[in-house]
Image (cartoon, rainbow, N blue to C red; front, side, top):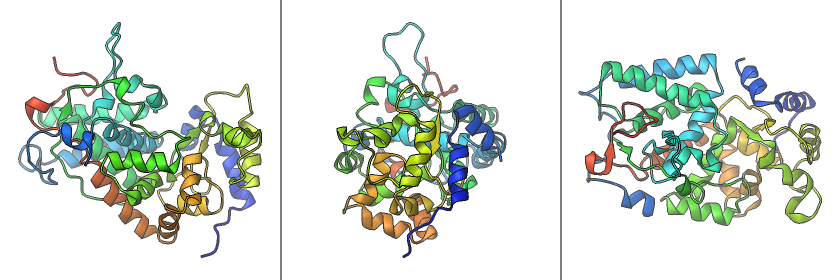
Length: 350
């Protein structure tokens, strides 16, 4: 397989895209402890879970996600990431949507440092969908299921696969910021750390690489990869695994110090708005942005999967859909003993 090539015009596009978040959004208008301990009952998630209680639920949510995608495309990568962060902290139970009570010393999951940079449009989208669903099927559909369906819709709207979402999740009763830090991957994690973290959620090496493919869309803040540009592993030199052209482009708008905290760069510098396999091809060409992304190619355990998914877009889509279904079953709660059905996704039931 020949190495992917990024033209000078594509790099110019990359430079244009490395902008503040507000401009980026405007431009885009063109088995483990968590999985077992919190699961109530023995019922399986089902595609047709709401076939009698809310048969139009998919259509209702789709009307909102389509509208949000057309008016604010940044909603797509943020919602997909929101679902990922939700499932990795005590299971897929919409606990990431809870807001902290004013004056309370116990911060909710959303206020953890690792959850600080979500685009507000993602929360607006979920709340709009919840309001619409409640108007037709009051007290029936959980916020957790709405989030799972919305994430799938946005994957598909950006050119990714359409896959059936199994439903039946209840919303979690607990949301703690302290639980988020150790359960969410960080940009500087080693592949060993990633494999161990994903393994603790019942996800394998193939799932790790496939789910990382979500970075085929979306943006990363400069602070997430700044050390790669100037001080890789304390050497006071750039990371040698980054393409010199990309290094130059990133250094232009991500200075070593004094830069804006709002400046971002696309994860995928070739097709940043399309859910495709170019993310993997970029890694082979040393065009990964985050150190954790590029490490997937340099590590001999994950490189074969990167190469395989980078050869076949359909294979990537199939692997991603399979991994999303698997991730979507982590720590599922059922029944009033283990969960709740919130009317407002940002507030626990009183």
